[in-house]
Each structure stands twice: as C-alpha cells, then as structure tokens.
Length: 536
Image (cartoon, rainbow, N blue to C red):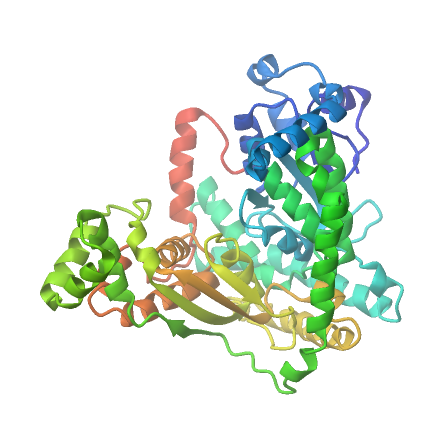
C-alpha cells in the first residue's frame, strides 16, 4: 500500500473507512461524487484513494461541498441494530434493508475472485478496472508482477512452476502490449496529434494482448449496493471454495459494519451460519458426481449453439401484446390470437416494435414471454463480458485451459505470434497439470484467451438488449461475433417477428473499433475544456 503523507492521511480519513487495507468504504461523499469517482476508477491505473487525492480533491469546488468530519465514527452501532430488529419484529419485512446502501472498493483482488462477487446480480452494481483501457504490466515495489499467489499452490510442489508460468504470461503481455502499437500504426495510419487516434491504438493493443492475462491478475473493483444484497453476498461467499474470496468477504463485512451495520448483522449470526452449512453440504454432495461427467478428449472449437427455444415464441408474444388492450380472459384471447392471419400478426408486431429510434428505446415487456438458451464456447474474456448482464441466467463449468486458446489477429504481421504461442502453450500445460490435484485453485492460471464453455438462458427482451449492445462498433471483436451470431440464430427461428427485433444489430467488422466513439468524446471534452483520455 502507499505511504501517505500526514496531510494526505488526514484528508483520506474523512472520506474512507481506512487508509491502508485493500477493502474500504466511501463515506461523507455525495452519491454523485461516489459514482463519478468509481467511473473514473475503472479506467485508471491508480488506486481509488490516490485517484481521489490527485483528480478530485484538487478541485476547489469539490472541497467546498464535502463535509469536514468523520460521520461514520459517530454511529451508535448498538442503537442502529436495535432499531433495525424492532422494525423486523414489527413488520417482518427484510426489504427494509434495501433502504440503506454503501459503496465499497476492493483493491488487489484477482480477476477470478471478482467473478464470485459479480455473480450476485440483484441489488449490487459493479465496476471493475478495464483490461481494455489500462495496462497490466506494472510491478510491485519488490519487482514482482501483480498477480495472486494462492497459498495452497505456494505451499505445494507446484509453487515454482505456477510463478514461472504466470511471470512468463506477464512478460509476454508486457512485450506485446507495447510492441503492437507501432505495428498497428503502420497497419492503420492516422493523425498522431489526434488524442482519439492515439488512445484507439493503445486500446486496440490492450485488446490484442489481453488474452495473455491469467485470472490471477490483480485488479480493482468498486461495488455499490443496498444492505439486503450485501447481507446475502456476505452470507453466501463466506462459504466460497476460494480462500481469497472468503478473506475479501470477511473484510467487506468488517467495513460495512462501519457504514450500514444493522443491515448486515444477520450475515454472520446463527441463521447465516446455517445457510452456509447448507451450501457447503450441497457442494460436497455434488462433487461426488463429477467423475461421471468428464471426457478425456475435450473439444475447444469456438461456437454459439441454440440448444433450446420456445417453439410458441411468436404466439406468446402476440398474446402479451394484445392482453393490455383487451378485456378478454386469457383463454379466450389465446383462441383469437391463434386464429389471426399471418398478415395481421405481422402488422401487430409492427405496431408494437416499429417506432424504436435507437437501441436506448427498449422494446416492451411482451418480449419477455419467449425464452432462448445458448451454449457458448468462446474465450474466457467473452464470458467475463457477457456474465455482467443481470437478467439472463448463466452457468459455467470450472474454468480451464484444456480446450485451447484463441489467437488474436495482427500478431503474425507484427512478428509477435511465436512468443504469444509459447506463453499460452505453457499456461495450458501447467494449468491442466495442477488441475489434476487442485482443480479450484488451478483456475488462477486460466487465461483470458482460453476457450471455455458456458450456458445462458434469456428472454427475448434481454436478448435484444444484449445483442444490440454487444454488437456495437466499440465492443471487443470476439464478443461482438458472439452477439451477432445470437442475433442471427434467434431471427431465423422467428419468421414473422424476426425482422422487427434487432434493428440496431451491427453486423459490420471494424479495424479501430473505438476510434469513432473516442472522437465523439473528444468533441464533447473540448467544449468543457477537459482531458478525456488520461495517459495513466
């Protein structure tokens, strides 16, 4: 951690629950400032407290509106907890805990561990440091790359092999992320004086080097949520099979008891312990079945496969569209809809969906009546991006390098394909070797470029959101391909509805995906006299 000056420490103590630990809360800050700070945090290489001092505290206007005392230290925890318990006894409503919230920052946490937290999709919002905008080639004060070293592996005969493999991945990443940029400038020449062009080249290099990053990579993450969601998160993740996740969860609980103590009290009481025991016993029982569902020759082909869908999708959507405009009971409306001519059905779809002007105009809830399920085989980075969608249900297998890896474009003409392959081949061999004895912790050596299998189930309305958002030009090319394929396969199953549901699906390919978006940002920034693309 940083060694703060006395002056800096005095400032930080007013707005953070501690100044040294990797987990801390934000206090005495307006909600809009917290949100802005976390937004900048996701695209900065700085830790949150340093970012606050360097880029927020320096503004005179901000200092004038911030409170000048440590309110969280004056909380009467006992009184707050007693009040909360009286409310529960009087009303029996756990939703009271949704009325209090908190911002929590997690620093020096592995990418793998962040996924355990982000699996909790309701009541919590997450913002993780972007692998697409920030370099991950930094070393700590001892000259070591910043990745997690799980104690179980470090105490085992695999310790040296694990660290050697991770170091090699980071050596190769550090080489590629910088050497790719002059090669990309030759391939896609532009104005070197244009900040949007320079940042697009940098972002493209980060995209191309990202597959090398192992899930052990240390990152930062901001979480905002209500008390009820935090209570559930703590209750469940204290039973996580990953020791790192349990340690961070304990730290979160400690810091939340300084901010919203009454709302998270039950996470560690007898009721919470009983729930964790239930989760652990279930996991132990299911582990016994694992050997029955393994193959010795796994396949690693990149694919998007529609494995299940609602054959009555169009019929069900039509009923849901018509129901609010009818006074018929559903069984009679169902009969009327079934008798509609194709031309009338298509006209009704048109009237319901035709006026959308852009992807921010969301289609109506009638589309939630139809469901689709896909199995996706893609690089782990695709899973990382798609799992963030809250409305879909997702299931993943234990992460592994055994299925092979993807090769980014432009490495061969840049003369960088050979080192990429060597690093990825070693990571595949070593991770599979460690997995035979330690399957859970071996996941730390899984790379962002490793092909993995996952399964998603989503309704048609969420599919529209996912497909239109993830196919946009500025998206990563690999998840854009998945979104485009999901859109094509759903459209093919809906002969009448298909032409209306994805009007903003982008099926084009681009070279510098984010250049146009960065130029828009640059234009807005000039009007406000700000620098939109910080170099650090």
